[in-house]
Image (cartoon, rainbow, N blue to C red; front, side, top):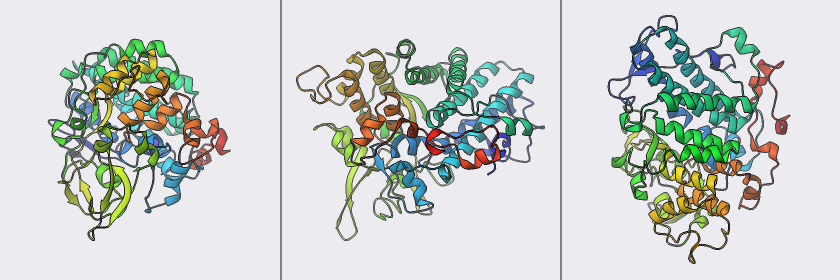
Length: 469
């Protein structure tokens, strides 16, 4: 896909509308940009397309998955399909500007941004009572997309309007500080205009609480701990921790801990999830019908769990037996297990949602922002572990910062947080060096390359990150 396409595509992807939520999708065909966006219904239909983009942007082979987990000490790839070296470059930090996965991510994010920018721009000509709330949903998603991008690439082109061809070719990279300023502006608008979660349009829609949770994480990433704590405290006590097993129970989706959750519906005729199929062991034919071997669990993550931490066995399976009864020593994620899923070919059409933001994240971010372990101790109380500051707590995590890092690793294992967390706290280089991967990095290698194809089509304005020149 050429660079220009991800600025211009809207109706090259399928728009889906629905009566109840974006799980019950009916395609809108033969539309074009000039004929669309004339009514509230048109804009609402376009929002389904914006939410549907999350299936790709947060899927098992997405940027958050591979950047968030595969680049960290948590995971490795056993996948042998496609361009294997592209997967291995995430795992081993041997990245180059020709990586086809990175190009695909870049294209997908800008395609999705075109959708939300169109909604925001075209809504100006349409009047309806809930317009501000709908725009707020679009701006929440735009903030989420740019937050992923700026953390992965650093400076990226900041596009807030649908671009024409000339503009698309002339747009260069925007300093990260300006990108963050736009993210904050979008989230401030979302906080002001979105309904509270109890009044959201449908399960999985953006809410005021989701905007505050994301905004708190943005401030924390920027190093503004006072603003992070101020923002996150608005959520304190408004949600509750549920039993850890309930988070992964398909019958208990969107529970009391969930803040923003991507909605899936099992069955091959529905928008089903692929985490279970893709994260199961490679070609196992026992655990799942096939298995892609992505994001397999390292010994570092397995050993990070304390004795008696029930989260380990709810998150990871320690091998399986073949049909002949031979034990295969491989550790793999089971948070998205769906053993009763209907098959679509050799892939399970699973019924698991994906949680992007949940209350435990808020609590642990509050500890990181304030230095107060009481919030972290609420998370540990849930699983019956010794509290920080008591005699039974592991002595090797002898500061609140290290304790919080440890807690985040085991609480959010394989949920696409780890590398983002380590980058935010300045610990990525040390942790990956001291892990079983034993990789030596410098600060320039903590971001991805700008795809070569993007630079080739825009050589006068598009620059490359330092590590890949």
